[in-house]
Length: 422
Ligand code: LLP
Image 1 (cartoon, rainbow, N blue to C red):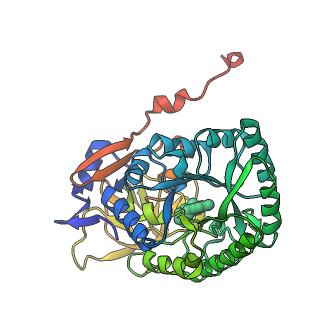
Image 2 (tube, rainbow, N blue to C red):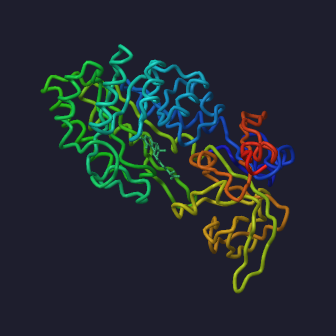
Image 3 (cartoon, rainbow, N blue to C red):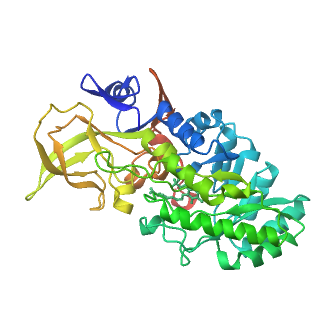
């Protein structure tokens, strides 16, 4: 469900027409819908309504300050994985005590920053990290609240590059070793055990792996309580998938996920934390591009856009599908022909779609990639010296540029030529 629909034949973001934005900011650009962000947050919130809970939005999915601010005003906490993300959460008005800090490689400096800013909890991913955190906290004369991220060895049945809950992945502590690490944690002066954390992967389209993981977490929680630990929070991670093909995909609903949470861990009386990223931001964003050329290749036709893999890397990196919509609605029954939709970057991997059946879209016309609100702008780079594309937030009939397009001068000014080359 999103708020990008055709009105009188023109694609709109809420009440704003896409060509209006394109005229003002140029292409390519990302555009986000406040109504969609809000709706997704509220649906998830309602799905957990009868459990004490905090939705800690995964900043990595889309860390634009305007997006974070939108969610912060709805009461969201944040899940961060770096000092940079922590600073974004704070800048958007999220208090430190609503920020959980995840990630396998937290540095001592990042730990200090988080502690100084009253972090809600560290999701600790190894015994080694626990030692380091204890040392930092003791040096600062504080106790660091922690949940141990356990690796339940569950197959999330998602793309291998985004599965995180199998024993061979770098994430978390094997669940079989967790009690030992908790025992060690309880003996540390700089550590306060508050919960258990799990995250098994992203874009899960089936609830069964969640169920398997949450049952293991419930079992572990009971064992840990019997060992004398005060487990009062369960962080269940993110990962709920979204439909990328509007035509034929129906991933599980947040409501069913909520029922699953209640069924598997509800009886423990813990405060539930969840870390959805994609579910909140994914379908709340479009990447809008212009067609530069229609190129006739040998037996194939290429639609060459002004957006490229550096702007949206998901198709190149995960073979991900994004629906591609012409901004001017095709006439009903318009002929569709298979085209390869590509960008200008000098790699064959710079292909958004192969043999995509699209109506005729000519040079200068606009197309929109749907479901680009999560892991779109957030994963963009300047490869091929293409400046990062701007981001726009729409709310009803108003819109604002929430990250402007850098100038070429700004891009070049970050480099310096050393004196010996002058
Ligand atoms: N919590 C942790 C600890 C995570 O590692 C992640 C995502 C999330 C929460 C949020 O997961 P979500 O609800 O968004 O599925 N770049 C990839 C996705 C990478 C996900 C990494 N971790 C993509 O474009 O598909």
